[in-house]
Length: 106
Image (tube, rainbow, N blue to C red; front, side, top):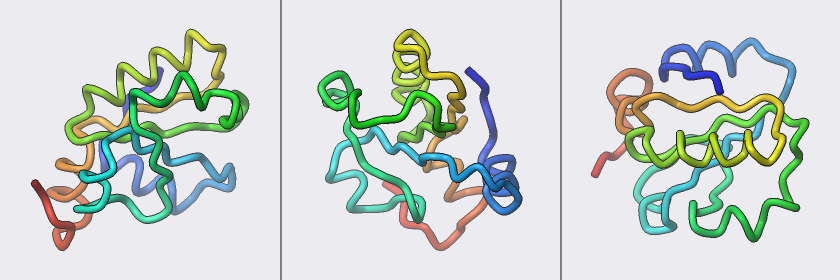
């Protein structure tokens, strides 16, 4: 699994044609407070039951609050044969600090 900082992900999203899935694995109440535009919410506990809805060939950027849950989900996805998984280091907290200063935090 690749690790990318918020700045790296932000730049990458501006330049890539690959249309990665922005997979937010936090709880819905967290997502309601703040999220990265275009991200899809699938809470961590529900990932195993929804795995068939995800494309293992699609590049997937996994997002959480601080980057810990997303790393765990990324490892799970890799074990499930997902080919291109990226963890957002520092999560939405780091994104708010480094990319979108107007994003609410909690």
